[in-house]
Image 1 (cartoon, rainbow, N blue to C red):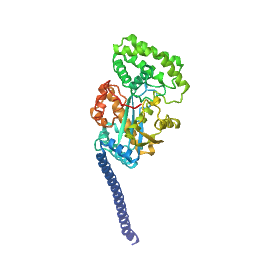
Image 2 (cartoon, rainbow, N blue to C red):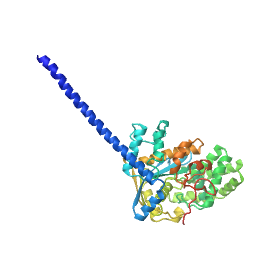
Image 3 (cartoon, rainbow, N blue to C red):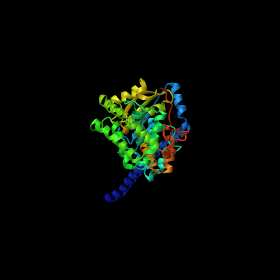
Image 4 (spheres, one colour):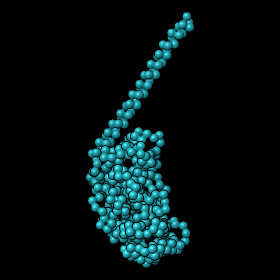
Amino acid sequence: MIAGNARIVAPRIGTRVNKERRRDRVSVTYIRSAAEQGARWRTRISRWWAAMTRDREPLMSAECASSGRILEIACDESGYEGDKLIGTTTDVFAHASVQLSGEAAEDCIRELRGRIGSPATEYKANHILREKSRPALEWLFGPSGPLRGTAKVQLIDKAFFVVGKVLDLLVERVGHPASIGLHQDRQAKATAVTLYRDGRRAFSREQWGKFLVSANNLMRVKSRGDVRVLVDAFFHSVGVLRLAGAPERVEEILARLVQARPQADALRAHFLDDPRRIPVADPLVPAIVEAIDHWSGGGSTVRVVHDQQNSLSGERIAQIKEIFGHPDPTLLGYVPTGSLADLALVDSLSDPRVQVADFLAGVARKIASDELNNRGTPELTALLRPYVNPHSVWGDDRSWALLKPASSFRLAEDGPGLVPRERSR
């Protein structure tokens, strides 16, 4: 009897336990469903807000300026290797800035995680650039995505940046050894476009490459080797190009470079006298200043939250603040239109807004580099175009015609790429 009763009671206990387990599973399922539903609603709201604010960046900035509110942007970069621009693993530098709330950025990352399906704790551009993740990329960059109207990316073709800077400093003399590379003199840019575009077509890859390397080394603050060796190497590379037979317009520029030996010696001497100055060949500070100018929109105050970067030391941040607090026309070549409230560094893992900026910078760099090297994907390039800053530093006419945003109503009259801004001195 006892055994029989035990057999009878046991199923009842088991049945009760099973019911409780089912009830627990239902509760968990309900909780998960509620969370997912909440996430979906937040995504819908984010899409609605993106649609409402799309193409209204100038208006929003003007409203910020008039109300005196502080506009906070989050920034990150891709392809940065200091002032070593040639002979590196990347040929394009991209600096992205996004104006998203922390909650909107969290929703964006959560949605991306679900769409990509990767268990990674921090997502990078390579996750979303995979072929299987194309739908997620189209959502993020598409017209109904969270970035439209809230993000911008500055593109810099490193080789063109080097050509422009060395000509500014040695030939046109519109730059100062302490310049951060933002001054855009029309004639200087026309000269840079001619040398960049015609030079790389006229000379062999080896000849043109050695010229770029020597020009970059000449402008690097911490270049190793004797000063005279660096200067001699640069002018030797210029001589090699002249002996190779250059087109008439290129030959004229090279002849002017040959006569600029005193300027080159003075440039290297300046680096020795003041090594703590902002490096002339470093694209990061000019990109940050350009981002602040863009989001300032004619006078609003911008607070920058930037991913941690060794080159952004306390001293360097103070120099950037000085640019906006007490602008020096000698240093800039123009007076900034915006104002900077603060610039703080954060770990991208702790700030989802910086993670979103990292996404944009990494994807933009890869797409732009592919287009520069004539291996671009039309669909991806079209997705990137609305986010490209029209004042990007770009010299290649073919790829810029595909990358430039529709709002960039014309190319520069003196060449492709960077549309000159009229800056007030």
